[in-house]
Image (tube, rainbow, N blue to C red; front, side, top):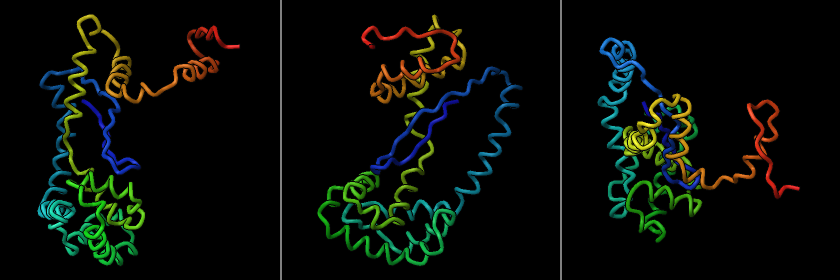
Length: 222
């Protein structure tokens, strides 16, 4: 099982990060029933709770944030309902002022040229952060973040298993789960690891007192 976290970063862009794998060692029918039936029942209960008539309305409400055609689908009343559905994310003060904030927001974005190029909700989020409007309309921006986090299945999961086929070859199929997990993280999130300073990493491990072996010190170090 692949575990991936989806979030909106401080620039308003949707990010996904691979956290790790959970290796299912037994694949017999009885084992699968023991490992997954309870989990599937819990997920099914949660899905029935979330994706009922209320959740259908939820999707309709989120569609009102679509910036295309000068926010033609924007509806203050429907969007204000989101504050009631996500009551844990909005205070009483937020709910009391949300309609006024939404009304001011739509007037603003339709008049400002910066938002003409927005073609979806993610590009709208990025533009709001770039122009610092996310601080002017915090509740509206929270709606946008919630909308961006709504998808539950993405191509990132498929990339994880494709990467596993590359790493877990015939020569490496006996490596321990922890090692495989570490290799997977380094491979999938290689853009992050490219930015790390090797010298800083070595210095940190050199400073650790309890370790299995001593790392060689850099020959250029004084």
